[in-house]
Image 1: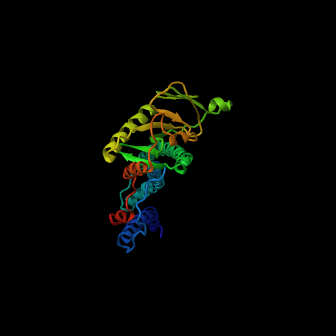
Image 2 (image 1 turned 45 degrees about the vertical axis):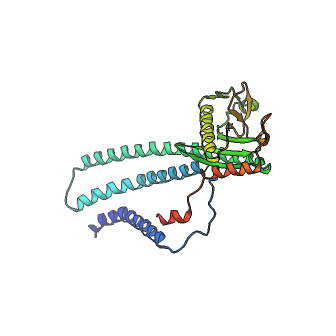
Image 3 (image 1 turned 90 degrees about the vertical axis):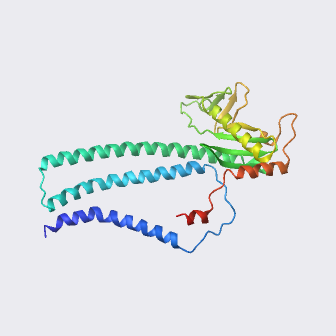
Length: 302
């Protein structure tokens, strides 16, 4: 009876893992063979923060993988040791314990470092996604005023958080979500100054977002001008939901709290407003840059 104990421990360590792998494989085969299709026939557009939500999902999968590895590794080491004993290959207990224990400690240290890094990335992406959600909600008055608001526009190597096409023009919006300090001075903690080049938060200075927003707006202008045959010039906007923004210099790039989006419904002085037909024409081209995959085609590729 005692001779069966090592085999039982090995089975407890390894069989659940193989059962899980087999179950996932069987489920994927069933998904490919099921005779069902999505009833959705209208192409969907990306919602706010879609790219960040996908990254969060990927990071959570990685986190789950490391958690499972941390749980299984000790059992695998124990099962390996018992299997070797069962096969009659005896080891020096002290030497084996040092080697196995050292490997386990190093492995767990590596996994812990990776898990902490993943948790930090998930938190950062979640905060960024929340900022994009907040900005999207605050831009809703533009829709009521006859404009269009599209999200997560895909470009080569980057994405534009929001694009607004309204009577006041076309706007490429980069959302910046940063936590406020808690020094006790509510007004000072909520204020950010912008000089056209740098965002000066109470505890940090950002010199890259203005450059990024301007580059994104130039790319969008070129794409839409070629696609529509109209001279489209997208204006770069930095959206800072929850912040009180003051400008110290005028510049091509605007930094705003998206609550103050009413100006997007009014053209610049001396320029005519975009006509509804023009708004629809430009919006159609932007839609092509933020389409979600067809669910039926995606299912067929599994």
